[in-house]
Length: 551
Image (cartoon, rainbow, N blue to C red):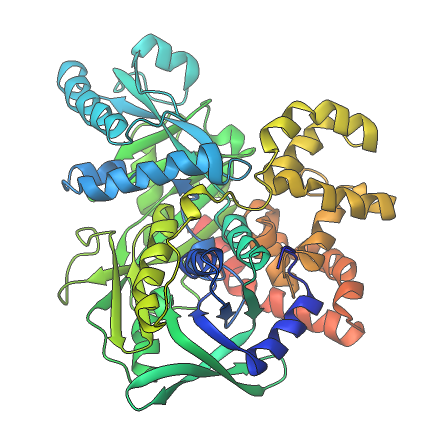
């Protein structure tokens, strides 16, 4: 308790604890929903363990649109409850819970028919603003003329765009945010163990009293005792239910969302853009010195672990974006592509994924066993709270109410003051002020831990590579404090080099392995194996991207 550090030593201690202690709640799944559930339970004073078969946020929670938003398109589906709930969470994250990670971002909603569109879109955005309640962390929407749009978004075609309405949502590095939630749970006493796969549930009659898990690094089986097991398996829910012999009250339908990444100069705009399509919406999202453009929303029944973009996915994104852009986006400009899978609660077989609700469902299919699926990344805190509210019925004791609405994530405390002291920090530690801001926006007040590494080894203050914002210290920190255990963990989730760097950062894999090897106790064999694993893993993605660009 009190330390948020995720390290190799911490994992070793967690593995021992899993076999020796009895937990109130065992959370299965290290995505954002599992993270939210673990934090909710730990902050209530419950004894909690979280196990994840792979790395934190290794599935859907690292492959989203990177947006914290109310879901403007859900207004057209009259899903006011979901929008209101998500907007409330957005305001909390930007202002209190995670301001170092969740940042406001403006979007232009282009208008084509001046009078009709302005009235319709304006009314919708007015409702969007009203639904957030009395909190006002983000500005009110604003109408803009064609002349103004030409100034702030020269890439929008002036022959068809008659004006726009500007509104605000927020964006986040989803994998970093998920990991930070889990670090916060750890700070409040949760036992966290990655590379731990659940083999089967342990039952006493019909009641679930724990689970047998496997440490995938050693092959060792461990019996974990828990009064309640909470499964937050996302797209793996159906498979896990079947494996455990449990019949849930819902099914999960997978929807694939694909995004492309293009250089900053490919789109000339100082704000994001949202476009309505025939089936959904398309976002053009500023991401540092690049743009993320997406997403698709199509049914998927392929490999859950490795969803890939197709030529049709990429063409759809380009076609939709190019309806309003001049000059148009070109295939050869694409520097990255990633695909994620949404776990949508299916009410009946064969439902179109674009029509399925983004609301979540909790289910207690056996005494001592709760599962949750569906929902939006933005409402992770509500999902975690609801799952634990249902799970505590099996604890047979008085349990405190959820307090996560008032619980900032680690790094949030003092963040706003530190931003105002950026020049002073830069001068004191000999770091460029721009770099200090970069570090504050990734670590918040935990910047002190990164700087400590630099004071111990000045070479770690050097950039990892030219043209990229990351310091060598951040690569080491990913292992010493953030639970990274492989080259892939560092490249794909602790940083976002997998889609930010050319060639999926394959050219950086050797340098990264060299930096982290001493802290993971690797010899030449382990180092080579981790490099090879990453390169072989992304080889198919790099090949697919090359094929997409040349198609």
